[in-house]
Amino acid sequence: MADLAALTAAIEAGDRATAVTITREAVEEGLDPRTVLGAMTAAMEVIGAKFQCQEIYVPEMLISARAMKEATAVLEPVLVKAGIRPEHTAVIGTIKGDLHDIGKNLVGMMWKGANIEVIDLGTNVTPERFVEAAREHDAHLVGISALLTTTMVGMRDVVAAIHAADLGDVKVIVGGAPVTQDFADMIGADGYASDAASAVEAARQALRAG
Amino acid sequence: MTQRAGGPFIVIGENIHATRVVLRGGARVVALADGRPALPFADEAGAERLLPVPDTALDGPEGPKQRVKHVKAAVLAGMGDDPGLAALGRAYLRSMARRQAAAGAHFLDLNVDEVTTDVEGRIDAMRWIVGAVEDATDVALALDSSSAAVLRAGLAAASRRAGAPLLNSAALDRMDVLDLAAAEGCDVVLSATGAGSMPANADERVANGRALVDAATTRGLGLDALHVDALVLPVAVDPEVGGFFLDAVRGLRAAFGAGIHLTGGLSNVSYGLPARRLLNDVFIDLAAAAGADSGIIDPLANDLGRIAALDREARPYRLASDLLTGADPYGGAFLVAFRAGELA
Image 1 (spheres, chains in turn red, blue):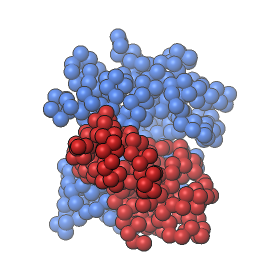
Image 2 (cartoon, each protein chain N blue to C red):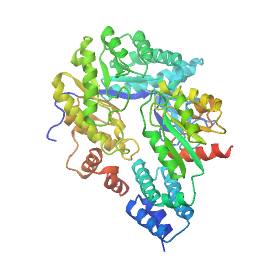
Image 3 (tube, rainbow over the protein chains, first blue to last red):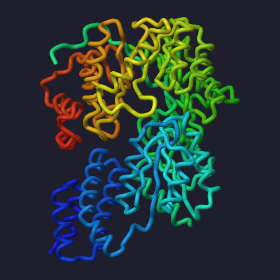
Image 4 (cartoon, chains in turn purple, blue):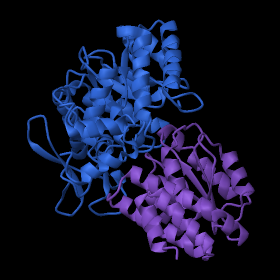
């Protein structure tokens, strides 16, 4: 019997080999892929909480996310076959004029860890490209990152463009070193995340707000 | 690694930067009678003073982990309408300037980009802070902004009593800063961030640096006016970036010889990791050994005398060095030692 508690523990510890082995066992035994996926996202919840109270550090969050990614790849064909898709899709990118991608990548990983499908548009992303990708992927969430104060102001244009486009209910979450809750409120963003771990909670809150 | 830095190491003191935070529950913040946070400091006469923190300089939910943007708090107070608060804000920043100068800073970096979101506000803030701190010490200023208009405003406000300010920075997509440096006789930091993408390795850092040095010398700037910043990124996120920086420093030193300054935002390397003072100390030592003669660092936290005396064979040094050069990717060994209390 595949030990799903051990799968959760392996992802928390960033132990890729064990995480992949247990996932493979679970797949061979025909376990409900949703249950297996749940064991993985549970690990990432713990990781996010530990990161927020500084019990663990950025590299540890990264290796856990990587373990989850490899284990998810094993599970992916079963999920596809069963027609199970992540409930939410996000497009994410760094604002036009800004080449920094560290924060954006960490947020993308934590969102994937929370079973949100993430479409990464990279850096230097124009408002038009955000809108186009949100439409193409039928996204529920748009995540915008900025590290420079000179580029941060461009977030206002993205928020306006997303909200003006006929996209249904799309929530915009902003973050990055110079960004604050006040600024997020001022430009009409639906959420603000001060770090990668809180980005998951910010996404959930914005989605709940409907 | 066989040698320490040969000549003097130029310290660009990085502390007066509007993003700098202290934790509300930490030793640098006290509570006023009404519970609001305040920042204790010693004024010019040595008297203990308290700078109340405005709400706009607080970030995150209230509690001991709430972030207090202390430099931003001082700038907002200093530029505000209340004369008492304005004097305190100004005195707080002058105290920061004196402490960095006493700790050996050769330049005082001033970055107020994050005080406000509009360019006009930043221009006002740069103009104000130059006037507020320039005569607090005998140390030259480094004007730091991603906007040439802000640098220009700071330059216009500077009396240059300790020499022309260093401009931080020009880059391939900010070439107008080179024109400003040439016209005003300033030294300038050349940032190796690319025009359309971040450099992916040491060679691209060197190539970006070369292109900027060529553009600077074409404008009549001498090599000794140039501080090439080969771009330091966090090893927590990519284990190779420490080595990329150090290799780029070696490459640039080989290409341009002793006449040029090689620098970097060296404390970026330890973002997302514990024991940052140790990591930064060791990275400064590694950078100097690779040929850097300048660093944008915190002179209070990373004392050059202590760094020169580091025992390179000691276990904490080796663990830090392995993490910083990619030999201990993602810091497995380093974090185990940290938790076991072996890095103290």
